[in-house]
Each structure stands twice: as C-alpha cells, then as structure tokens.
Image (cartoon, rainbow over all chains, first blue to last red; front, side):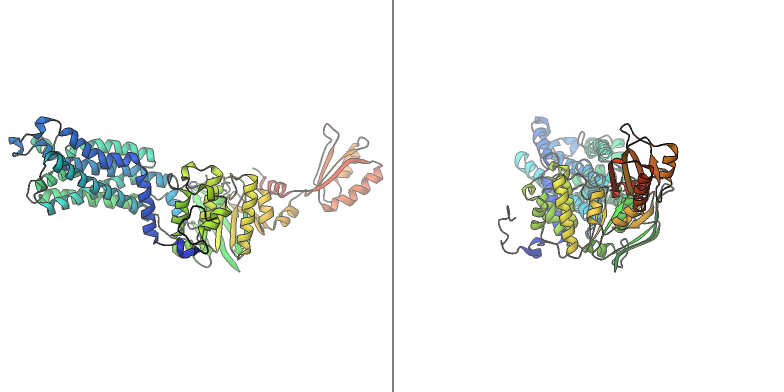
Length: 266
Length: 305
Ligand SMILES: Nc1ncnc2c1ncn2[C@@H]1O[C@H](COP(=O)(O)OP(=O)(O)OP(=O)(O)O)[C@@H](O)[C@H]1O
Ligand SMILES: [Mg+2]
C-alpha cells in the first residue's frame, strides 16, 4: 500500500501528512508542474524570442547605428520587440486553449464540486503565464546584452512598469479570448488571428519606430503598439510617455473587466 | 433523520421542464437510489443537490444547508462523482489525489483509498493515459477523499468490469456502514437491488415510484409469471377462464413450442393449479417466477415511452 512513498512514515501518514499546503498553493504547484509538461508552450514563450534575437543579430546591417533611429541599431529595437513577442505568445496563443479546455472538459466543473473555487485554477494559469513572460523578458535582455552588447534600459523603473503593464494587457486579452470562445478549437483559431495582428502592431516585422507616421499613429492606439513605444522610450533613457502607458492601462482594464464579466464556468 | 431534502424541485431548459416537481428525502446512513430512463432528469436532479445547478423552483437542503447559497460548507461535507467530467490531461493519478486532498480541511488518507480502488499501480500514470474504468475509479476516489458525510454518485459503476463493479459495491457498503449517506444514480438493476435501501424511479422529470426494491417489484403489475406447455390444446373458453383468474393481467398465446405465458400475481397461482385440475390438463415444463427489478422498472416507466 505504501509503494512509491519514500518519505511518509510507514505507521500513520494520517490526514495531516496529506495536507501540507493550502488549497491555492496546491493548485498553483500542480498547474506549474503541468505547465512544465508542455514543451511547445515553453519553447515558443520562453526560448523562441531569444532565438529570434540571436538570428536577427546575424544580419550585419542590423548591428550598425542608424541615423533615422536616433543613432540606435535595429538589434537594439528588437530586444523590447522580442519581449513583447513572448508576452503575446503566452497570453494570446498559449493560455486561451488551456483555459477553454479546462472549461470544455468539465475540469472547472469538477472543481466546483469541491470547497475550492475553480477561479483558483484560472488564477494559477494567469500567474504562470505571467511568470513565463517575465522570465522570457529577462532571458532576452541577458542574451541581447551578452551577444550583441545591447545596452540595459536607460530608465529601468519606467521600463519595468511598461513591462508589467504589457504582460497584464496580453494576459487580459487572452482571458477575453477564452471568455468569448465556446471551445478550445475556437480559442486557438481566434488566438491565431489575434496573434498575427498583435505581432504586427508590436513591430515584429517592422519596428513601430520605423513605421510611416500615419501607420504609427494608428498602431499606437493598439495595446502592443503603445507597449512597443513605451518600452523603446524607457530603453533609450527617458520616462515612457504617459499617453502610451495610459493606452496600455485602458486596454488592460477594459479586457480584464470584459473577461471576468463574460467568462462562462461551464 | 433526513440529511438530504429535495422539495418540489423544477428545472426548465429552453421552456421544457426537465425536472418537474421532484421531491424525496434521504435519511442519514441510507443508500438511496435514483433509477430512470435516459434523459429522465436524474443527473439534473442530483446536480441540484450538489449545488452545480440552480433549481428554477423548489428547495434543496443538504444537512439543513442550501447547496448554492452555502456552497462552501456543503462541498466540505458532500463528495461528488459526476457523470461527465475530466481532469487535466497530464496530471498523474497521484498528483490528482494529492491535489484534491489539499482541498479539504480533514481529508481521508488517499493511499489506502487508492489501494482499495486498485489504483496503486497507476499512481504515476497521467489522466489521459488511463482506461475508462480506471478514470472512473479515480473519480470514485476523489468523491471520497474529503471524508464526506454524504456522497452523490452519478453512474458509479458505468465502465467498470464485473469484478471492479462488485468490489465497488462492497466499498459503498463499507462506507455506508461507517455512517455515510449515499445518493446513487444507476442504470444497473442488480446494483440498485443489492445496494439501495430505497429507490426513486424518475421518468420525464417526475418521481413515478418511491419504495424499497422489494416494494417496487411487488407493486409492478404482472409480478408473477407462469409459463407451461399444456398437455392438450386449450380451447377458446379455456383461455377465457385462464384470463379471468384472480390477478391475471395477461395471457400470451402459445409460442412455436406451445408454451403459454400468464402474467399475474401471487394470488393467481393456487386458482391456476385448481383450474388445470378441473380442465384435466397437465402442465408440462411449468415455471413460476417472480419479476425482477428490471421488469418492474420497465413496467413503471414504459407507459407511452
Ligand atoms: N444544460 C442543459 N441544457 C439544456 N438541456 C439540458 C441540459 N442538461 C440537461 N438537459 C436536458 O435535460 C434532460 C435530462 O437530462 P439529464 O442529464 O438530467 O438526464 P439523465 O436522467 O441523467 O439521463 P442519463 O440516464 O442519460 O444520464 C435531457 O433531455 C437533456 O437533454
Ligand atoms: Mg445522467
């Protein structure tokens, strides 16, 4: 009967041994384990943005200072862009199918029949994807610094603020996609379209700072256009524009409220 | 004392009443069964007891508490096995048991429970890799893991092999002997007959019968079946007299082997024997059998089905 339990005392493991941690912590630990069992998500969120940065660094022209970028190099711009890519992937691509599947398969429902609210499961998932974003951001920063000598952000506090707001916006957008999608399949489809749009606005194909004026004005209204501008400003040493931070905060608030209002538990 | 009280519960989906004024109460320490055809409203009813669905009208009380308003307290004393649910695909059996243990203030030890349900060799297997019956056993374990006072089991043994089914019945009896109240939805008459103290038969959202298993059988029309091969062909008047015997509900004409079947009651047997003697007919291959709960169930629910 005690097979496989190495540490439990053979006499009486008892209920207290089975209950070492609180419910919320237990959910978080279990979900963290599950998160680590998804190599696909881990690669695209955690490794791919850094890989992209390294590949872009192979283009010699990207490592030359450019006058129309205020003397900065293209590779410098791609550090915040890669970080945004990680956030968009985590929030919009990776998280929605997981949450919709939890609802679709009755996992949330089964949990509703216990003393723990199924919202604990959602909170754990949001927290884990948020942590993955920030971990990936750190990795991109370190890779940029060591491989291509990209300077660390000149305005670290403003940079961190913009970073946290961007992550929150990505996760709230992802949560809204879950709330609106009936099935995991639909969530994946909607997420893929949103993913492409957001990659464009974040400047993955063409940095926002290099976009023509009119296009840039439009893109700045979107969460990741604003995020891109805010991060770039903080990276080059000034406090990010309040207008950009405001746009980000507004998107976060609106999608956050929408998601929590519209989310169906079953 | 009643620990579950369901009073005039109604639930409507898209204008169609699915549960239509269901009332019953379950006493502490009782095993109470719910039988009924597919779509009768059994799952809807028990999920109102679990607080997972909100009745449109009527009241439900579990240990005096409202399963919706007092959801937190009700879930601490009620363990549920749902007819349809899953766990995270990559969660192992052991992790699931540990996780759900952490949800309850005073959980049962999951190790003996897993052993009892034959899961100890599967502890490191992920949920998605379990067979249907193994998933079912895991859900039974999860229903019991909080050391509940009431367990609600919706199609407990569906998907279990005959041995696992019998083992599970024993487990349920042991749990009841420990003072736990069991509310059981089932399609297996043998299960209902063996386990249940009382049974409610639900058909089209209404309770059509509520009795002990023996009571239900007795109540069914044609609960005694007499079949025989008459030594000579019976004439029309003979058949009329057979049909007129006390308690006889129907007489089925001879089949290809000449077997005649009477559906009657216990009271039909003696007059039947007397009538045969009077007619000078001997009954070959005579069989007198009581109906099973199966037939009682069909009888109670078949009207205009
Ligand atoms: N959420 C829902 N929305 C709409 N209709 C529903 C819903 N849940 C159940 N129904 C309908 O209510 C009826 C009763 O369903 P229920 O699941 O309670 O039946 P059941 O007695 O448990 O049947 P079974 O033996 O097949 O499990 C069915 O006709 C079903 O289609
Ligand atoms: Mg059902």
